[in-house]
Amino acid sequence: MKKKTKSKSTATTAKSNLPRIGLEATVELAVPFEWTIQNYDPRLPAVLSTPAMIGMMEMASAQAVRDELPPGAITVGTRIEVDHLKAATVGANVRAHARLAGYKGRFLIFETVARSGEHVIGRGRVFRAIVDPTRLR
Image (cartoon, rainbow, N blue to C red):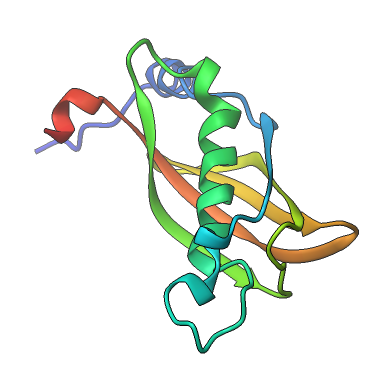
């Protein structure tokens, strides 16, 4: 029995449907109280929560490739590898930046960084997959 393999032209065509490496986007906002860990536990400080920072990185990643997706397609988060390095207090301006750095199978890999002023408050990688949203119902 012969093993089936994709021809080089098929693989190239499939890859050409993916968003271009290097696409970037930035999401910026002032930290609202609702995004702090104190919102969940009053004993904790009013600083940006790790899930909120990651959410900003996810939003930047999704926005970076949005215009190069097939019609009707979206991206969904599948994996995160992020370090939260410094605190950002209520009202602090936070910028989350994402750049499409590569692919791993069907996954898009983004390099991400979050900054408040000149300080890097978080960095890492966000993985997303391109999906048809009608299949998520």
